[in-house]
Image 1: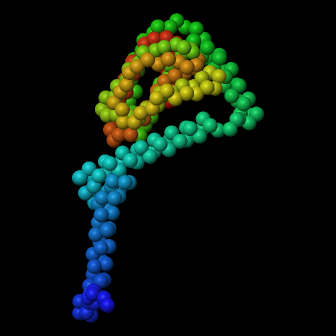
Image 2: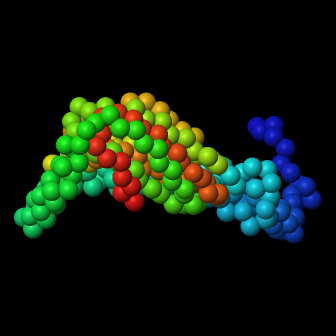
Image 3: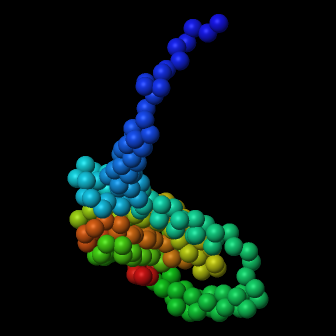
Amino acid sequence: MYNSDIPSRAELPTSGQLIRSTVIAIIAATAILVTVVLPAEYAIDPTGIGRAIGLTEMGEIKSQLAEEAERDRLLDEQKTAPASAPADRQSSIAGRILAELFVSPAHAQPAGRADEVKVTLKPGEGAEIKLVMTKGAKANFSWAVDGGVVNFDLHADGDAGESKSYKKGRAVPGAEGVLEAAFTGAHGWFWRNRGKADVTVTLKTNGDYAEVKRVM
């Protein structure tokens, strides 16, 4: 009724052969995990083979991107947080009064200035440079990285509590363009060095702003 051949007992693998095959499979899987998966996905390279064939660098890039994505998520959560409690609102009002005292006089200064600022960042270090601008003011800018690339966020904080992200980028060697203030406040760049060596960011600006200052 059936045409298939039933293997004899002699043709079946022995217990020793099954155990040996299982051990070989475990060793092969472990070797692939250590030399390929861990370096490529998590930048963990205990043997050094991953870095030799370029997989560890891939894992480092993935880790950096994951860290930046988490930072962006936290920033988005802060922007969408519920309204502040009364005490927080009082602190915010006090902050605005101080801003009016110290920033508003700067806004009254003549426009049309030009500046050049250099910032050196160690691996993992960040820095923030802001231009004090009135709503609708424009400033030309260009910045370049010497020694590598950086992640950046071009954003603004308003005197009345506004916030805005103009543009973001990862592993960028530089950028240029025109910054137009969406509202009165501090507008500028946050850079972070995710490389393994020091880098220097040179920012050149000219236009309608009252002050250039380093925030952090």
